Structure formats: C-alpha cells, structure tokens
Image 1 (cartoon, rainbow, N blue to C red):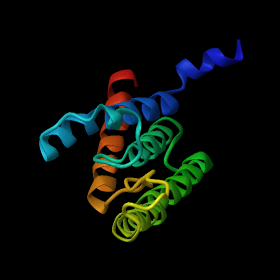
Image 2: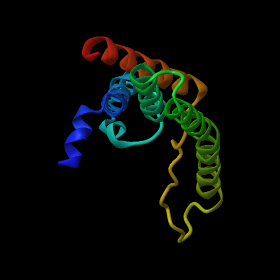
Image 3: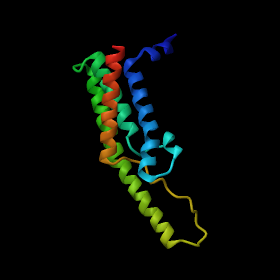
Length: 150
C-alpha cells in the first residue's frame, strides 16, 4: 500500500513531531505569560514557539540527517524553510499588525454604530524570538529523532 510508507518516512515524522510539540508548548507558555489558560493555541497560528518554523526546520533537519546535507532534496528543503520563516516573521506578522490597527480604528471611530464588531485576527505571524524558538525546537527534534531511530 503506497500510504504505508508515510509512517516510515523519518523526515515527515520529524516534522510532525516538531509541529506537535510546538503547538502543545504554546498553551503553557501563554499561561506563564498571561496567567490564564488558552487552549485555542493548540490549533492557532502565532505564539511561542513558531510551529511553522519547527515544522520546516524539523523536516529540513530530518532530510539532511537521513539523505545527506549535500542532496538536492536538502537544498530544496532549506529554500522552502527560509521562505516559510520569512513569511511567518515578516509578511504574516505585518498583516497581524495591520489587523491590530484596523481593530483599534473600528473600536475608536465606530463604537456604538451598526457596523460589524467581528475583530480581525491579530496573531497571524511571529516575533523573531518566536521564530528562533521554533527553529531550536525543530533542530532538537530532528537530531533527537535521528539519534533514537537512526
């Protein structure tokens, strides 16, 4: 069965484990930052650590360790990882700042008027520290998986 190979793919498994840990860690980290539990972080973008960075660095590390750091697949993984990290820390972060300002304008200018009160998502991207946290987590998971599974 062709799909059975998915469970034997070390790069894919590394990526999934790194993403899972990043999403799971967001909940207690946010609790320590804000003093309240927000289980929505299990399924949302944004927050510490960056699950985008963890996923991509995890798969890239897995590819490098299992296929070689001189492989064409690793080169492609590096390029894709850099694009995702740039997007999460740059473009999506800036879109979140725009949403924050638009929400502020709506609250200040139109309060009490019959206008949609649906707020825009402000946590879309990541700060450089959140991205760094995701990179470190992805590297750690990739290396640990390689050492344990081989």
